[in-house]
Length: 131
Image (cartoon, rainbow, N blue to C red; front, top):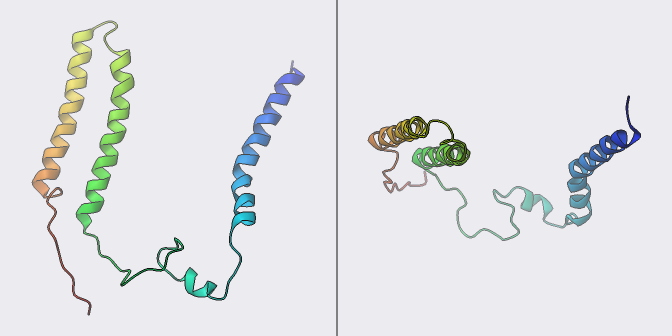
């Protein structure tokens, strides 16, 4: 019914997954710096990169930046979808498959036009005064 080798494979994959799940915590424990005199000050910083910030750390980003990033991610995923589709298509009905890909890309183009009309791609420089 079950072969011993199959159980060994399952156990090896389980142990490998456990090592990959717990390993980073163990490595971080040994490599992380220990508490110093100004530990509390460093942990209260906005960005803990090891470099002392110069000037004010509060920067306000416009919502257009986030919308632009979301559109970029959506198109990156869609391009990843198009590669396997382009490889599989053209086997039986190449003209129909080409038209389907054109319809898909056309709908994506309408998304770009819609975002453009909404002003997502206009980067206006805004200045804020501290109050």
